[in-house]
Amino acid sequence: MFSVDRKSVLHRALALGAVLGLGVAVSGTAMAQSMVVRSAGPSAAQYPAGKKLPANTKVVLKASDRVTVLDKAGTRVLSGPGTFTLDGAVKRDQTQSTQIASLLSTSGGASRTRTGAVRGAPSAAKPSAPRSPNLWFIDASQSGKFCVAEPNRLLFWRASVADDVNLKLANASGAKADLLWKKGSGNRVWPFAEVPVVSGSSYTLTGPDGAARKIDLVVLPSVPAEVDELAGTLIENGCENQLGLLVETMAAVEQEVSPAGDR
Image 1 (spheres, one colour):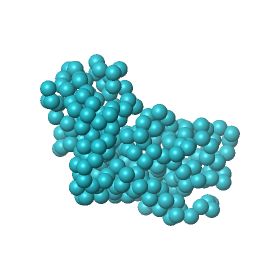
Image 2 (cartoon, one colour):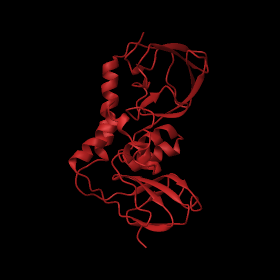
Image 3 (cartoon, helix red, strand yellow):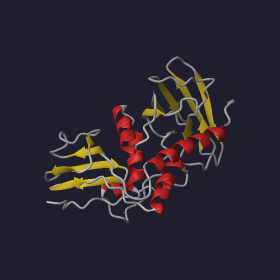
Image 4 (tube, helix red, strand yellow):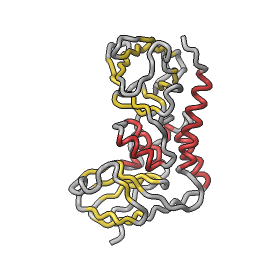
């Protein structure tokens, strides 16, 4: 059905994830700015999602404030009241560096992401549902905007591979294609010949039950090498599902910041 070599596409997508992972996971100590990716509470307007915070910025939070920042060191959840210094120091050994690269680029990594690390849930909390193992795979279970890194190398992903399943992809112009997953297969190449990838266009993905999910593609002119800039790009383009995946992936190797802060 497709002329694109699936293995080649998969390897390229994973390689891109690995590059991003290595770019944010260098061993040793470095300095980095932070990016606000989540914000709630009375100070949310002061620290909106997408706000850049230079190294050594002092974040002053009130009671009930909760701000999640992301930098090369990972994610940090700041809970008020308190004053927090974002020194931007990246202190990570090779094992942690490899773990981040793996989480961003391999299928085995997604199951190890810990939503609880971001949300502050107890470590014994029930594991979250499986998520896409790569930032650039379209999760077939999700709707919303999706940022595309390589429009000629686009893959769908599904969490459960227990059964055969056939989904139908269509665009607003009426172009259609079947996406047939065989049992045991997690990825499917976008049907480029039947349904072209066009930035700004909307697509519907319909399952056997008739439920349709709307996908809006945003083709990025370039992919930022720095994780905070990448997060900012996802925020700017409204790619919330990918932002959530990025945040949870980084959170897997970063502990929540103490709410006591430094007074």
